[in-house]
Image 1: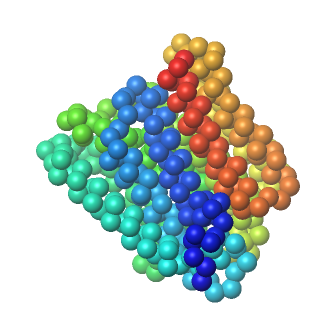
Image 2: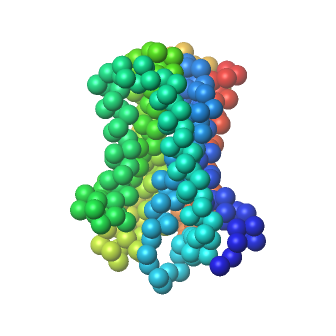
Length: 305
C-alpha cells in the first residue's frame, strides 16, 4: 500500500473529500452573510467540516468491489490505513464537538421547539437513507436507487446543512429560536437548485455504470444532449431568474446582482462543456469548484457591496 505523503496531493485533497469540507464551510459563511447573521463560532465550522468528510468518505471506505478501474476507489484501497485513521479522527472530532456544544448550550438545546427539532434531524436522516446503498440494514430504503431523485436528495441535504443549520446553531448559541423567513427560504431554495444541478451533471460521469445497473437517472432516461439542454440549463435559468427577481425586490446594487449571477453563468458554461468526456478530477475540481466559486462571489457581494 502506498502512503499518503507519497501520493499525489491533488488526489489526496479531492479524493479525501477535504475540498467538500471547505466548500461546505464557505457556503455556510455565505448563507450567514446573506441572511444578515453574524458568522458562527469555530466550533460550528469544525463540526461542519468534519461531518462532511465523514459522510462522503464513508461511501467509499465501505465499497467492497474487488475489481475496479475507478481511480478514486483504487486510491482508497491503496491508502486504506490512512483513510481509516482519518475517519476515526473526524468521528472523534464530531462527537467531541457535539458534546461540547450541548454542554455549553444545554438550556437552549433543551428548549428547542418542534420546528427546530424537525429541522435538526431531517437533513442527517435523509443523508443516512441516501447512503444506505452500502448498508444491509438500510438497503431497502436506499434513496440513491431512485435515479431521478438522487440529485434532489443531495441538493436537499446540502441546502439544509449550509443554509438552515448555520442559523439554527447560531440561535441556540445565543438563546434564540429559529424563525422561518422569506429570505432564508429563498436562499435555501437557491442552494437546493444549485447543488441539484451539480449532481445531475455528476450523473453524466456515471452514465455507463448507471445504465448497466438500470438506474434511471436523467441522463440514462433522456440522453446526454436532452439532459443538458432540457433539464440542466432550464434549471439554471430558473434559479437565475428567481435570484434576479429577489435581488431587484431587495434593492441589490447591479454589482451585487452580477456577482451572485456569475456562478450560474459559469454553471451553464460548464454544463455545455460536458458534451465531451471528462476525467473524474475535472468533475471534482471544476464542477464541485462551482460551489466554492458561488460561496466566494456571494460573500464578496454581501461584504463589500
